[in-house]
Image (tube, rainbow over all chains, first blue to last red):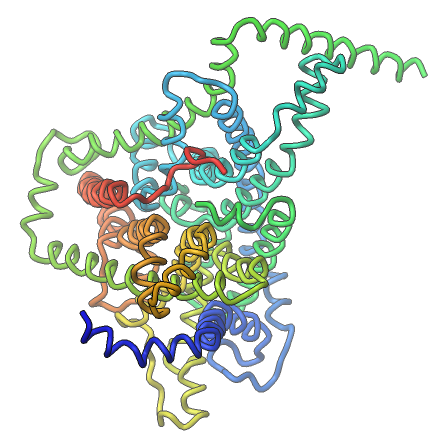
Length: 277
Length: 306
């Protein structure tokens, strides 16, 4: 042990002296690793010569134009929005009910409800995706629009609940008492006191649910019927069979949607809330 | 005017009915609870629990989802050298990815917590890539790693290599891709446990003569073990079941177990066999979760409210 300590001592001194410099190197390196690929995507979406012309000699908006006049891509976006908005609405309603039930009530099966609302995050997507296909096949629901919506709801409930539940748990119930003492009835108290306080959390949960649903691939890929290509499925087909520079453009669109959604969600709650998972 | 008045009347009429309902429910706790908890319960049981059970049942059928019951699917999987190799390789890749992500992610979380004041901004920079599409993040790496891609061009420009290297479609590409997608996921619990830790503990260890390295291994790491275990679980499980990354970035010798399932459902159409492999993956997941629960990882929402 002492020999080991002796051997460590110079190293200890080195770390002691250069700790903060080392930390800065780590941060710069990892953030470069996380963000350079995204920068490359954005840059190459403007590259005249397509994805294999790095560094691009000329920048152009040509691929953006091609994307905007691409009917298949436009249909894919429309379908994605049609699925995501409906799934998000359902998920927000259900997650709010879960949060309310877990926060306010004691009932048998409460632990199981929390477990069921968390497991879809934990189980590998391919497993749940396959399970849903088999289930829909068994009950003859087939693979249409609603199957995909249901799959998206299952996928997004855990994330929305993870954000909405803490806003209920941290809400100061004494405000409700005060409201009732001042003569408001239960409904007024809920609409005028409880709802405004938990609303930012619900909205944040909804934005994240929408972001996930908008990006959802695995469940959709397994559950969808033929001709039901959401944008991520469309990109998958493009990548696997014929890459065009348009894929970079679509990627940039995705990035913008996700980044703006998450930034709004974060401004509504705390960034640490998203870190609790 | 008259129209406005009648709208108002209607809305007060509706209010009165809502009020009556609220009063009615106030005295009936059980009914109220089932009205609130019932719908999400029903949806999760019907569209999550039941499908998994359906998969379990179908995994014992032969050939089609209505075939006769059999154990063949499991027996065939375990008896096949090919599938055993795939399973073993999947485990190996998963362990490698988990190790890399844990070390790099912990180093980043530690640097942010101890050496930076702009934690909110940095945390945002960590999570933003995570919320973008998985496929697109893989596609970004295709841009970079493919033969003649960004990495090759850069290396040639810097005169490190003469011709294209083309790292795409290799085991290394798969490792890079996985590390890229799961790093943010692991940083979050690491960050949470590190920022909850009392920094005085480190000072105490140093006052008692420990250097920074010794203080790290005897104080910081054991104190944040829960966060480490949570991060490991969060990376291990999705990597083990993944098919996208090896399909897009890997070569012929990086087939993983998730791809075998995808194959059963997209081209071979032997659903029961795919279901059996799904059950095998689930068994691994349950084992990892139980192991994690013993290690003190916390995964379940709300149980440990803020």
